[in-house]
Image 1 (cartoon, rainbow, N blue to C red):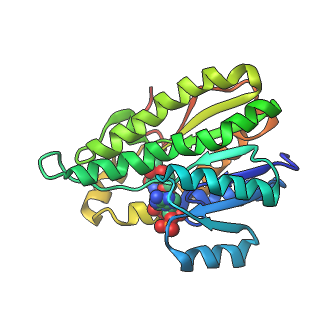
Image 2 (cartoon, helix red, strand yellow; image 1 turned 120 degrees about the horizontal axis):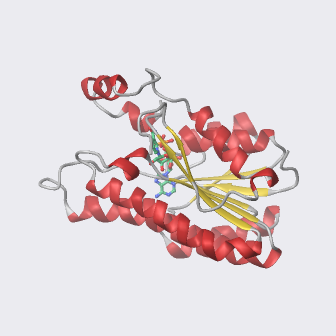
Amino acid sequence: MIMARVAVVTGGTRGIGEAIARGLQAEGVTVVANYAGDVERARAFTEETGMHAFRWDVGDHEACFHNCVDIAACYGPIDILVNNAGITRDGTLHNMSFDDWNEVMRINLGGCFNMAKACFPGMRERGWGRIINIGSINGQAGQYGQVNYAAAKSGIHGFTKALAQEGAKFGVTVNAIAPGYVDTDMVAAVPAPVLEKIVARIPVGRLGHAAEIARGAVFLASDEAAFITGSTMSINGGQHMY
Ligand code: NDP
């Protein structure tokens, strides 16, 4: 159990983030979810789970700071940060615009920096904290048509290892999860023939489920995971082993 803690899960109203929010809530954590703009999904999430959802762009440095201050004022200091929000803007380098590159870096990697800046100092002062960054198999192995996404996710893995070194002596662990292909809206956007080829390369023979990623995150957020920091948990059905 992880009772009496407060968590923020970015991109927590659907997909992997929603599963993580629900998983933490089941352990007794007070969870606040963040989202970007899908108000209907956020409303349904709050109605179903009772968890509150705050709308802001994690790529906006000031918005991250102000919303974290508001959340702490309403619910108490943020003990657990799950940097899950992410987007894709796929295309070969040949076709990728600077905007496609920049948006993915700004949200996927910049979001981790912005949220850590807002939450890490308090965790450090209180001597306990958990930061869990959602990377990707494609940040580990690369992926055709994703130089922006692979670079941002690979950056998340480096960010995790560097911040883990800063947090270790203050009781703040920083870890990453690198999911393989998971059956969320993001993967539903992949054309069916491409997806078939991807599934054929997954040794367990199927896509992952969001709840399977959430179990890893809930464990990393627990007291029992205090000796794990700077690590990457790969949850990918055996698709990439190293
Ligand atoms: P989804 O596209 O299903 O959900 C994304 C969530 O992030 C939504 O809640 C969305 O809000 C939110 N979001 C997007 N942009 C922003 C932003 N700028 N500010 C705040 N919130 C934002 O994604 P998944 O659940 O599939 O993926 C979650 C994470 O896991 C991502 O980081 C992704 O890269 C990573 N991942 C996913 C894999 C997969 O196979 N699905 C594999 C490997 C990694 P809204 O609903 O308002 O749009």
